[in-house]
Image: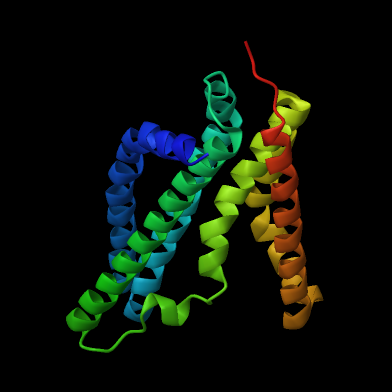
Length: 222
């Protein structure tokens, strides 16, 4: 298992070029939005805007890469003689590493914007970790990777049709979030929202554990 894990990480090492190239672009977008917010006479919100753009961009990047690796590359790599647990562990570590790198970049850009905008406008501004709730960081770290695992497991177990159904359900939920999130916040108390969030997180963990089982039992395609 250890040998396969190390070989998988070495094989994927060249793919780090994509996130390393994308993160500076996301940083420019975040800083640009922060400057725009600061020019609109709300400089106290500028660092938060830059950090949120970086955080969401990193989540999107990790989601896309996780889906590609667990839905396509895993089935391809199974054709080679390798330990399945080591292969799956290597893909998980690589995707988690990209997610962690994206979060560190968001934290760094947000902190630098806080210092820069604070010095430019002559007022102390709150750091990103003081404005973004603590639970958001682990959710953004693990959520995209677990989502990729679930979609990959569904494709291995039920075929491409199940993958596309869940994919479009996911897109639908994300695109209509501005409609159903206010409904939830109006109908549930903060305690109820926390319980719903915890239930959703637990369901995702259970689905990911089931998907891992499917991936470990996936058939080798000729």
